[in-house]
Image (cartoon, rainbow, N blue to C red; front, side, top):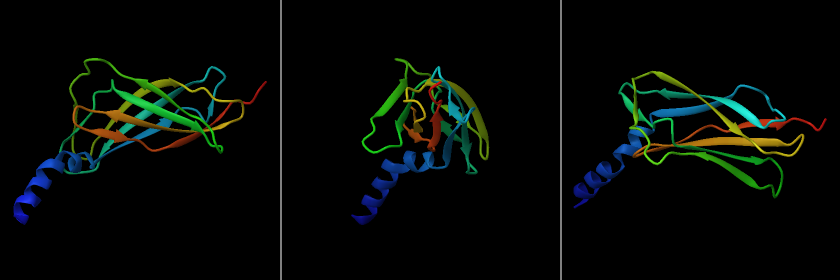
Length: 138
């Protein structure tokens, strides 16, 4: 009975375990949020295993951002399509590079924490968190 439970758990959670070998990092191209609020991000996928892996098509993701202040509201910018493409392959020990631009609404001179989640057909990847300062009032 115990063996059956272990096999069942391995089968159920094996896609999650394989997804753990891929990491995603977001890197802003600027150190502060411009007046327009539009910030470009470089997105790097890294497969740190010796096996190929799957990463989501770059069509379904959400960026969560919120001020680094007590009782600050968190905000979300999501981008998704009804029929996203198939997951992409990433070779062992490889890096894949993507780019995107999001609009961040923040008060003048406010520090904002930003992270992203990318949604695949059977997986979900959460990025690192970066902190940017909004442009001060002119």
